[in-house]
Length: 249
Image (cartoon, rainbow, N blue to C red):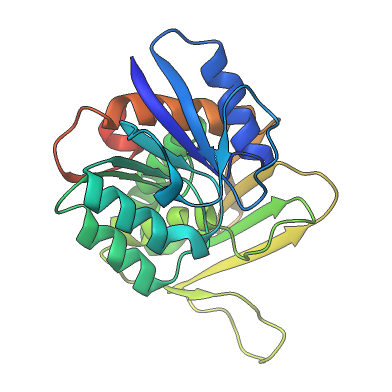
């Protein structure tokens, strides 16, 4: 039985993770971490990792990048695995995550959805086949409460395409500030925020007289919660290292 602590337990994703775990028999929630310590589920919520009365096997984090230092400190001290599912980390924070993975198992990905990770592989294949004959644009759409833009998933997709083309691309996030023709080495990344859109990602490969579009749409947050719980069970028994969805699938 995998013992899990949920960081961001009283947020929408934290509650979704708790709901998924409640329907499984291979893991359990032993506590939560949240600045809001109101008890909304059948486990106690603490304001920081240092208050946890029991050491878990793994912490699943759907909170905020500002919580990273506290989580890494606790996990490194106690030898606890981490599933980091928050987005918006800075390059410096990403480096801290990579450094911590030398001592503890860390599951780190910009998106916990199996479908998105399949989309990523399809995009890499398309980029390698189509080459520089097709322009690449990425459009991501999310709800109006999302703080970061572009989404971590959009950047993950762009990075995968760039990797498939030996790093030849540069990213362009806004075109209104200059007037010039589009270059073949650009990946345009565009963000839409509105309503309650859970998460839509579209990759457009536009060539001469033909367009290929790859897309993924999430209908609910549960798809990310399911992926995070699978990741928690997977990484809880792994040695130190940096793991992603490609390792699990």
